[in-house]
Image (cartoon, rainbow, N blue to C red; front, side, top):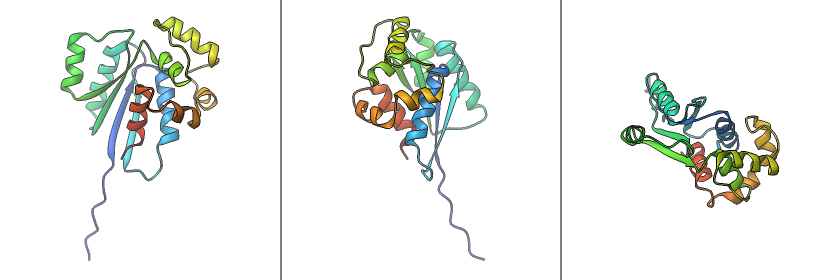
Length: 169
């Protein structure tokens, strides 16, 4: 009996996000940019708040049960990294994607709108331009369709990094 050819394994990507808004946005990007048949397996995990410490805890817990080729931490700059956290992320070779000051600023930048310097102001501004619940996937289908995202590509580094994570083979 002839030997079966070895099947190519998928490249695995882990994206750990800080909260529900980031999770919904990353899931939306995955639904648009990930195509069936890609040699890629993308997992999105939510740290449910707690800032960088929560993300690191989630990265550590997931690493105990699975190995990933590429790991990405989606952080908000409104809670700065402590030196020990930054060192751990660099040592563990986790790519850092940072929204300044928060994910709402990145969403405003994608829409081509003014981005305030403080997180509460960003949240208020986002509600003016895209009212609704940013933790709901339907929100992103309504305000962030493929055409809007494609126009913002190359201009919004956080968007570029997330699209690359969910779509490259």
